[in-house]
Length: 316
Image 1: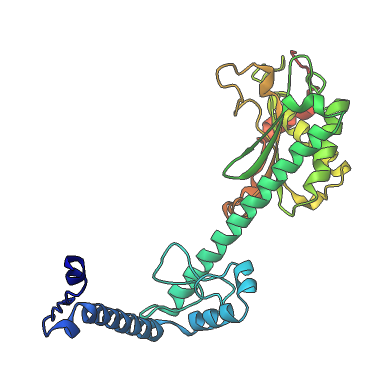
Image 2: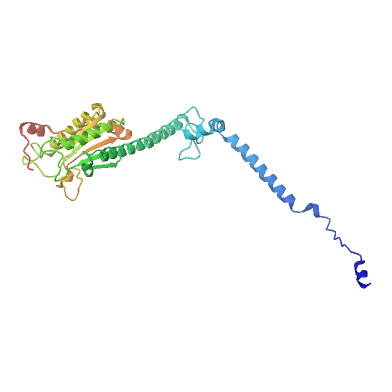
């Protein structure tokens, strides 16, 4: 019976009533924060639309209509600005090429456009010259006849443009001693380079260099100045034989031993070299603006007369 009495005991369930503020918990704070964020984003969007130029709006429209095309063209702010050939963007984040900023005059806008255009041209030209440098290396390396002379060909980028230097070696001279007659292997190198240079439109400067070893006739007669000029001109002829057009050569000059390759030893054979400079557009403009075309290779009259009457007598 004791077991039956335990089974008949009633089950008591206690219900605890919560406070009357359950419907006003922290959820409203999250909803309010979302609302404020949405309003802030809305007003920011309205402000951006109000301060955006028509070019920017057109660029955004074009992007969403054809995003792949805009991304391939470079895109950027103002990519839809059809009034300018310059893409938007630049170093100044407050403006974009081809668009007028408030308070900006027409002259200032054109000046900025010109600067941006030159910067873009310079960058494109630098890439083209670097590709040309790699192309010259490839041609020399892949040619069985020229690969052995690879150590005599030096390439570097300078302020004037891509410089291709062909330097002399003691056991492998580029010219006959004291003369401007090109050695057969030097002829092959120059003609191969001339063929590669036809791939770019840039103007060229040719420079002849000698070592500091003087001629027995001294500086009055035929000297290193005339020799370096003659060797530069002989190199020009070989480049043209390789396919280069003559009008591409802007300047041919002899620098004698005034710019040694080895400054510690002016008589080092490596100082005897030919430099071919593929000029940048900026270097070409400086050439014309400075009037260098009227003064290149100017030789005093008395020196010219002495050179005409004195045959070359090399001391080498």
